[in-house]
Figure 1 (tube, rainbow, N blue to C red):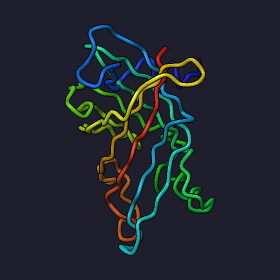
Figure 2: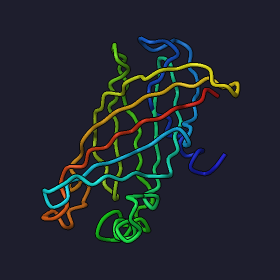
Figure 3: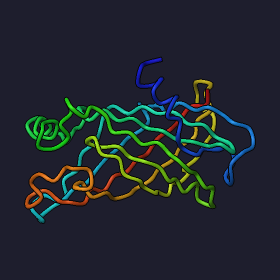
Figure 4: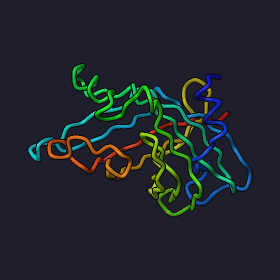
Length: 189
């Protein structure tokens, strides 16, 4: 178990259940599968187009049941926009400042089951600033995989203002609003 994975186990934070509806009574532990998970983003460039990127290093763990919880950690240095020069700029002090702020962390504080999945309330820490956020986590599916594991999948899309996290450089060129999509599979432990 890596340090990041152990950290996630302590943060434990998305609401996942084995059923289509509400939370199950017994707690189950899940580990996010980074090979089948993605965090992608979109941001305006010069008010002309939307630029897209992703983070390549994601970890997380989940507890399901009445005390359901969900947690993610993302390595900021793993930002990838398919342009090495731009990625180096994004990792630097003008944007993510990955040396000083190496992780983006989400940890849930409340999870409420609904017909589509869960409404999650929690805290996101980015660029050294923590803000509350509420997202609708849609359950995509669940079931056995060919390797003997049992998996569950969720997805959410939401928008944040980057200046709320102290990332206010170049607002005249690069948009204020960042749309993020978090899509993941987790394996029952």
